[in-house]
Image (cartoon, rainbow, N blue to C red):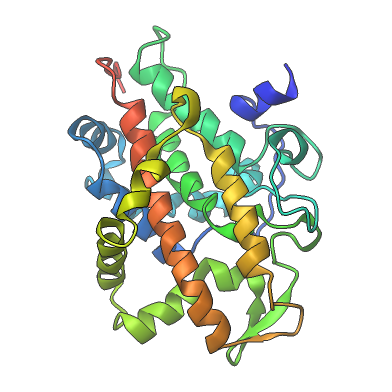
Length: 299
């Protein structure tokens, strides 16, 4: 199998590196992406999502969007650690699947973009009854896919290999010592919730949805599209993220920096738009997966 095929399918995920310090958006970020996505699901897609969700989710996709982070400490899921991100060469500011999609042991096809392709394929093949026997855990496939589409929209999940996506860049967020990756995962969102949304996550979600309908209305159709009728297209999302990492995340955030209002207020709009894009693209991917006349047999 060639490198390009690995970037598309990535069917074997064995012996993946577990990196405990690399997480996606915090719980709030992943919840927002999936809650936004729910609003844009077609009737068929919403029905299938609810059918596949575990019973404890009570039909709410957003309730399980942090599941992939929560299970990483479990020995049976250590393999999933490398699927949450993809690192690029330092200062290149571009993403190339054949060059970048590998784990620290340089096993090809083990990164977030390949994982998105893989779990999309699992859901699509079962739904369209490409095979007579379902070989995958489709509930896990849905939860992994929903989480990883969120992850690839966090700019520092496509950060530089030398600092592990900002994890090794120690900074202060106002008076709190942390690292740059954590600032982008959780701290900008947490500060926004406290300062602008009365610590009410639903208010922040509504504000983002309002921007989708108004300020970003003319961009949404482009967000939804994949080239050459693909079901999912994470490689362009990764390219966007590393470009934004260079332009916004790493800029003025050298080791020892104190990041305060000037950084926070200029980066918050970037994060809110990435959350919106993640939600729209998750919905569009699920809508395309579940768009046929097929039906999952015996889930």
